[in-house]
Amino acid sequence: MGNHSFQRESEAVERAFDEASLTNREKDAARSLLQGMTAQEAADIMGVSPSSVGSYRKRAYEKLGVGSGRELLSLHRAWPVAEVNVDVNEKLRERGLNETQASVCSLIAAGRTTAEIASELGIAAGTVNSARAYGYKLLGIHSREELVELLKGRGGRETEPATGSSGKRLWTILAVVAIVLVGAIALLQAIAPSASNGPVGSLAAARGTDATPFTAKAEDGTILFGVNENGQRFGRRDWVTAYLGGIADLYAAEGENGEKGFAPQNAEPGSPLYDMDGRTELGTFSLFEWQVNDLGTEKPSPDATPFAARDSEGHILFGVNEAGQRFGSKELADLYLGGKLDLEATTASNGAHGYVHVDDVEKSPVLTVYAEDGVTELGTLTSG
Image 1 (cartoon, one colour):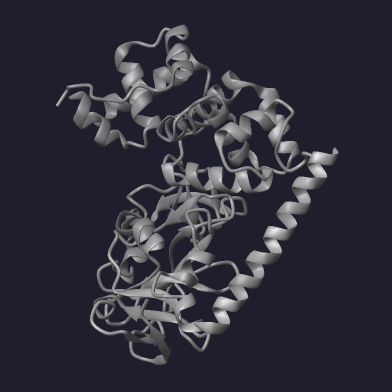
Image 2 (cartoon, rainbow, N blue to C red; image 1 turned 180 degrees about the vertical axis):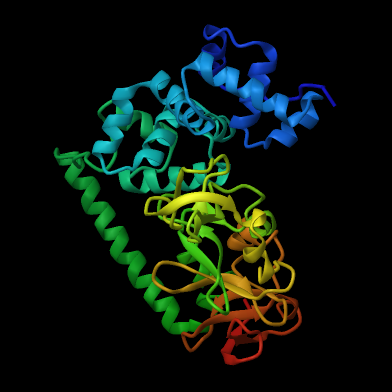
C-alpha cells in the first residue's frame, strides 16, 4: 500500500509530465493508466481510494491538455515516435508498412529494446515482435543493422544487384550453387522421403511463427483469442491470461446496443467498439466481457474447452483437442501453449500433415501420424 511502485515511462513522456507541472500523485495516476491499471489497482498501490485516483487522473488530463484517458493514451503513443524522427516513420509508411509496423521499426532503428518499445507505444511485447517481423518482411531485411542501412539509403528490397564483372561472377556462382542444392534436396527426398520431415514440427514451422495472424475458436465457432493482420493480440480476458501471456491489445467487449466486439484495455464508454481486425467499428463501447453478466453465462473456460487456431487460409496451427491434448509445433507451443505439447506437428511418409505423440518419439523407430484428435491415423513416419 502506498509504495508508488509504478514503472517510469519513456524519457519523452516523463519530460512531458514535468513540463506540464504534474505533481507526483498525478504522475503516478497517469502512469497507472498508461500501464493498463484500473483505478482500483492503482489505488491499492498508491494507498488512496479509487475516486482519488480518478481525481488525480482528471487533473493530469487538464494539465496535459487532453480530455480523457483515451486521448492521453493516443498522445502517449505519439510522443516517442515524434521524438525519434517523423521522416523515418513516413519513409517506412511509404514502403508499405502500417502505422504500428512503422512506429516499431522507427524505434528499433533508434536503438530501443522490445520492452522499451512496448512501454512507449502502449502495446504488448508480442505485438512488437509481430510488427517487427512483418515490417522486416515487407522491407526485405532481417536485422536492425540492415534496417539502419536501409534508412540511410542502402540495402533492403530496392537495392540493385552488383553489376560489374565481379558482381556477375558472384551471381553466376550463387546460381550454380542453388541448382546443385535443389538437385541434392530432390535426391535426398527420393531416397528417404520418410526421414525428410521427421518429428520436428515441419508443418507448423512452415506455417506458424510469432508473426502469423490466427484466430482461435471453440468448436461452436466462438472466437476465443488470436492475432490479427496488424499484429494486435485480441481475445477474452481469461483466454488471454491462459494463452497470450496475460496481455492483449483488444479485449472482448459489448457495445451500447448489445454488439459483441473488442476494445482496448483503457476504453471508456462511448469510444469505438471494433471487430477483431482492430479497425472495423461495430458500434460504441459500453462494457468489457467480464463486466457483462449475459456474456459470462455461457462463457467457455480455458480449462475445459477444446479449440483450434487457424491462419487466414484455414490451416490449423495449434490447439487443444477433446482429450485435452495440446497439439502444434514446438515453436508455437513455446509461444502460445506454455511450452507444453502432447502432439507434435510433422509430415508422414505419404505426405499427410499430422501429429505424432511426443511420448512415442523415443520409444519406437516407426511412429504413427495422427490427426489433431490424437486418434485418427493418417500414416506413419520413420523416426530419425
